[in-house]
Length: 270
Ligand code: NDP
Image (cartoon, rainbow, N blue to C red; front, side, top):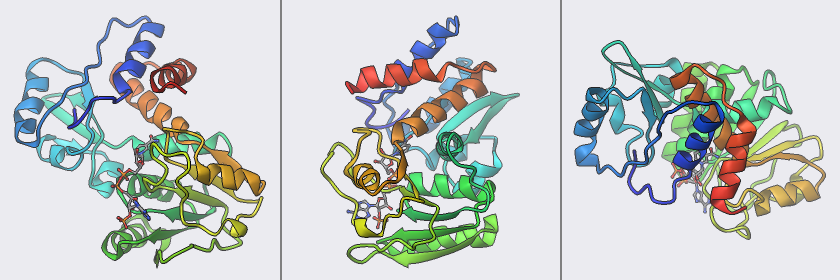
């Protein structure tokens, strides 16, 4: 559920994965206004839904209609995935978990120094999950002071990870000892030429560089990092993995991530 939801690739990806797993299940894309959210969640319960995903503008508002939250969703203060339990729904957040799963294919997060660009919903989800996976520190680089400070405080006070907010004025200079650099902003969405304001001369080939942007997956930011010799992770892996985690929560079955990625690429025309 979301508003707007036109063009959202989740249904296409999930129904391909259901079919590949031999499950006669449906995943529906539903346009729901904020006023109708309470009735829509009650309707899901009445109709016996196993769960669902929530996107903008419902990620925070849906919390009031759930019986409990997982630890990660509670820390993030946002829910993108719910599942039925007894007489109600439990709120989970799979965005950060999807990122960490993609990360773990190339790097073990424990003990790593992280630079996170952005402090919005996606960045917050990633930061909390990296904290729960015991990274050494997270520098939160963000323009807006309120969001930047709030995330750094959450990480240091509630997740127990060394963190500080760094104001983003002009070109950001990356510290030499960063292990992992993440673009968690919306810069690059639907614009392959839009560049994140980072001084590309400060990339080191020892850094792993990731982007949350999945359309297009080959962003100017990742291209600059590759030119500097860095290994990179695109946003499609995170999107596939958050979907795979939801699929497992609802069905109890591990989906085939290759089928999901292929479906996404087909839907997005990439
Ligand atoms: P939000 O609106 O919550 O946050 C946007 C963030 O981007 C803020 O930190 C904002 O900074 C920053 N930002 C935007 N423009 C600029 C700019 N010109 N310069 C510096 N900072 C900027 O969005 P979300 O966190 O929900 O989503 C961010 C992106 O992540 C989207 O493009 C979305 O598609 C993608 N995403 C990808 C997922 C995946 O699975 N791959 C999952 C979820 C999201 P400020 O606070 O200063 O305004």
